[in-house]
Amino acid sequence: MANGAAGSGVFPDEFGLALACCKAAFRASADESFDLAGIDWPRFVRLARFHRIQGLAWSYLAPRQSAVPEEASRALSADAAAIAANNLTAAAECDELSAEFEAAGVPLLFLKGLTLSALAYHNPALKAAIDMDLLIDPADLGKAALLLEHGGYRLFLPRRRSALDHWHRRSKESVWARAAPALQIDLHTRTADNPRLIPSIDVHSPTQSVDIGSGISLETLEDGELFAYLAVHGASSAWFRLKWIADFAGLLEGRGAAEVEQLYERSQELGAGQAAGQALLLADRLFGTLKSASPLRQRLTADRQTRRLLETAFRMLVRERGEPTERRFGTVSIHWTQFHLLPGFHYKLSELSRQLGSVVLRLR
Image (tube, rainbow, N blue to C red; front, side, top):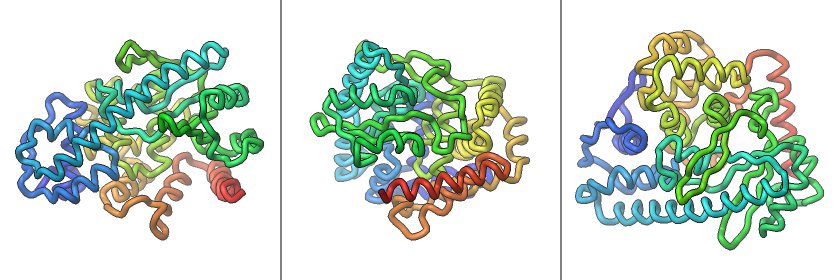
């Protein structure tokens, strides 16, 4: 059987291999002795595609190709090549967008995507992404929309351009896409679905410049803000996709206990609530992230609500049931998690209003 984790029992072989692939992408000392003999390869390929870790998987498996059946090898290598090619296209487009927004005087940050891949894995080509996440000031929404339209992008969500301002008052992002080359942009005017979460993280927050290769550097959030943002982003979907927690663990790899604790404390100042503790405990269970930070682990584990959030995320992650939206009651755990990220009646009331408003907004 594959690797287990403290308090979690033994993982199925295929999920254990997926963890090994992710771990090897950010940890130079990762164990390379994973036994591939008992792997159900069609199942593993499905798992890798669902969790969007094909690039990480092939990076780990390519040197062991002789132990991988030809069909699985072809599938994963083709997926990894497509991810690398898409990332090259996205990198060039991000460079152009950065220059165009700067020339127009519109502050712009890149969330997740290529910048996070470079920070977490030191290789922007590995990480799969279906979109580019851009963060702007709400006051610049009209200018940003014109820039995207000039670049050939079409608004997909909301469906009507006239509804864009109203949409962004209720939603953190709109969705834009163009056909050639095929690219999607999620245009953010805030960083969390509920504005009470991480309310001060915006395009004017502290930033860092990240080299994504080919002489291209993009601006993203500084580590403290990025830590809080990633925790809230993952928690908002109950961490059902492995690549999200792998990115988070990769970002923390190599940091000492004091620095990890400092990042956690900063996340609390920024309003990440229990999303940060949930993220740390989940990363620890899967990747041993808190191995050198036992006091912080004990402190987080002592909180009953954080433990419940951890178990909810862990169940969502290891159950192979496909997209939550594709099955009946599949999003219940996500909605439950969203209600428990901050304490207090006022937050829960605001979250209920947000979720009901989101349903109404999407029906229009």
